[in-house]
Length: 214
Image 1 (tube, helix red, strand yellow):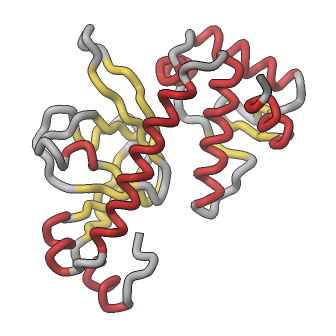
Image 2 (image 1 turned 30 degrees about the vertical axis):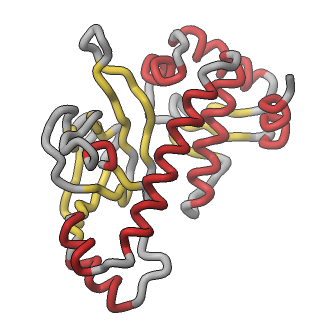
């Protein structure tokens, strides 16, 4: 986030950010319907975003990775529109929005860029829902890979902390379909399951070709 800010502005930003919020797996950062308080930056770990559906059960609508900012859903209405759960031990930095905007006027442009990325990711997720189960899973894995790569992490091997049921909920597929398609990709030697949750992408280019094929 501090990219393009002066050293003085970065010092001011540091004074407006708390680095002390540690979430254990399963803990909640904020809940849908609670009053907007702050934006949060994921410093380490990862969190999932859920939203209540008409049956009052939670739908998984996405995940956030290190370096990504959470909380834009609460700015317009003054209430958070979704719930954030840690899916592993995670460290988040609380950003006092009013203080940052007052002390560092130039930071607003940085925040708008993050908001734009969040909107684009939501549009991307809706478009993926229209394709086959195989392509939905491949698209999800490639999206994670790309986001890790942009943040300086290993792009070809990462933990998939969502359960098969949660991943199915996110991609609008059954848990059985998720398991079947993932194992099929493994048999084709396009990916490898290092353990129950760790995925290794072995044939990145072939996965991309499958995604764009008619």
